[in-house]
Amino acid sequence: MTEARLTVNPHFAVGAIRRELFGGFVEHLGRHVYDGIYEPGHPSADAEGFRSDVIELTKELGVSTIRYPGGNFVSGFRWEDSVGPVSERPSRLDLAWHSTESNEVGLHEFHGWLEKVGSDLMMAVNLGTRGTLEALDLLEYSNVRGGTALSDRRVANGRSEPFNVRMWCLGNEMDGPWQLGHRSADDYGKIASQTAKGMRQIDPDIQLVVCGSSSAHMPTFGEWERVVLTHTYDDIDLISCHAYYEERGGDLGSFLASAVDMDGFIDTVVATADHVGAVRGSSKKIDISFDEWNVWYIDRFHAVDKITGIDNWPTAPRLLEDIYSVADAVVFGNLMISLLKHADRVASASLAQLVNVIAPIMTEPGGPAWRQTTFYPFSITSRLARGAALRLELDSPMYATEVYGNVPVVDGVATHDAESRQSALFLVNRSQDEALTLTVDITALGEVAVVETHTLADDDVYAKNTLQHRTRVAPKPNESVAVADGILTVTLPPVSWTAIALA
Ligand code: AHR
Image (tube, rainbow, N blue to C red):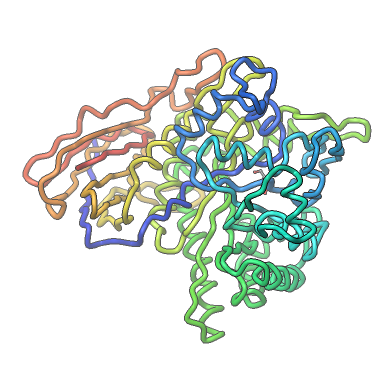
């Protein structure tokens, strides 16, 4: 058994954890909306056609803001199609996912669902096939109380109060050649700046997110951020990052170290944003909205799922329905650790996505809803991580990876809420064959008791929860945790994620 040591001290605060860090993402894609959150014929459907079993699981997951309606979908979306009497809404081609969008669920219905799950809306505007005017129209429709054509239209459509949407994304992944309306950094920076200025003229208090890179491995990464921020620095609040990870070619060691890539991605974007700020002599800081992150077997999507054909535009097809393993959940939990470690500059994040589509919640039409393995690290971290994120003084053995070189076997972060005096530790053991004993110096926390422990691990690191075996994988209490004389000890099984709450 190997050993590692770390120190937790509330004086090592990285930054306050903002609730927006635990956001989600609902895209009109596959069976996410239709046959996912919305299934009027389902036995658990409420009066509005939303599945109440999915509502309950979403609440348990603990998602704060939810980004909507895409994703790639938004770059072909006409928001006007999704409001007004449902019977009059047009069906449209969704070019991003080669599907048919019925518009049966639109802005009003989705906002109603958000009220049921207790989450806030983060809205994306279409800067792919549309432009500034349509973005301004949508903002007027959403946030202006009344007395204008578009705000009165919202009132006539049944919503007298403004939706009061606080966070807005200026397009989606505009650096990606797959994106409808993909632009150069220069062209996108100009339209994003112009749109942001106009939106602020309507509602100065909104938070605006400009598109950063679709991954840290895009050929334009770094330069994209520099050019886009040079155009938009004074107009926006946040720049986005997107990242998806998957195990490739049986290289589990590198996959388990995916958070190393996320750490570097965040650090590089922060450095680039600060560079642009320095050149401008600005004291303003641009924070990060990590508004798409997850494990996604994207290679499988391209090889198997992709829909084609002029006569083939299905409604709610099964797309991106990845079934997650224990190893996936460990990587996923580690990505959350990375976000928390950067709580000073990652102001907001959105798990992509929520139901059926690369999702922590799965459903079967007319059947059950269940938790994937990734559900657990999210729900537990969202519930326990409060106050400030703490930097750990970590002394860990290293291991060699194909992709990232030598990396620590253990990764982790702590949180501490000064008011309630509650702390939490989130840890991963990336070793594939060895359990690890961790010694944690918690003297600086004073007298503490262990209130909860959870470890996600399994003899079969590829074990999954499926329709047939919906509760095969779940975290278990970690009986090894002990505290004596200011020292906490815990055994972390191979390929595991652990949370420990102290009070
Ligand atoms: O989340 C799935 C897709 O991934 C989103 O639509 C897009 O923004 C990203 O490429």
